[in-house]
Length: 352
Picture 1 (cartoon, rainbow, N blue to C red):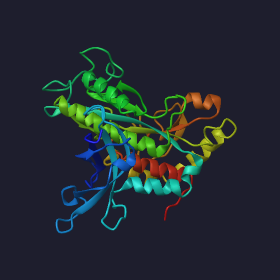
Picture 2 (cartoon, rainbow, N blue to C red; picture 1 turned 135 degrees about the vertical axis):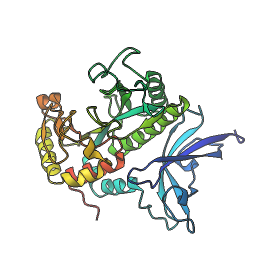
Picture 3 (cartoon, helix red, strand yellow; picture 1 turned 180 degrees about the vertical axis):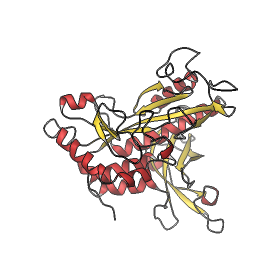
């Protein structure tokens, strides 16, 4: 037991702009004890190589905040999500998780906000979406959504392997499906209805980042690239979003549900532009008012309407309580940023 070591894959967000990217490095840790967060010590890295510092003062710190079994390296190894801190022990400006934490600590947590993320993405190989012909275009959209068969579904082996990895890591993954454009897929992270499941918004944002990380690793193994671009192919093709399901203690209460949802939508309508600014780069290319979107210049809500900014599921409207779906976030949006905007706006939390 005393000679045991574990491999800990430290994962963090870099300072790339306008869209942050994932980085990681592996630390081998002697471990003769039960594994908890204290096993994973802070670790330094070169911020000048991740767009987070200058070369003459480049040392930054990784602070572990949660960990998961590593399905890539096997039993006894871990994926460790980290926040980035300066040498002065302050959250780095690129540390969006810290901003979300602060919003929860300053009153958001009292309303027990939950989130579920529907992450769309596109596989690329040899410079084109997976399954597309070398020249020209595939058949028009229609037969590809939730499709079955090698002539319409491309990359399923990667999708299935990714889902297995998410489940082995203990993530609250609750489904996958082929999307409207060939080569495009979706996975979902969020509440599945199981007893004792914790779908708190910070945890779900963490798990969405870990799921993205695992997806990129699986695709790397298969020689395929993952694109989170909001409009991976220009023209008459669906874009890629990260629809976000949101609820609070009040919206989930049968006595206050619909009133709380209506109040939330009213609050959201007043800060539409602020949300759009945080909901992903180049989102204007996706939010056109076509392809199941509302125009980026409008704010609309409705029941069962996928052409709205905020959709209330038919089942929620029928029973009178539950959650709503924010359809505005792009596939490349930062789950921490989306969560922060929803918490601060819906729950009237101000952190400054």
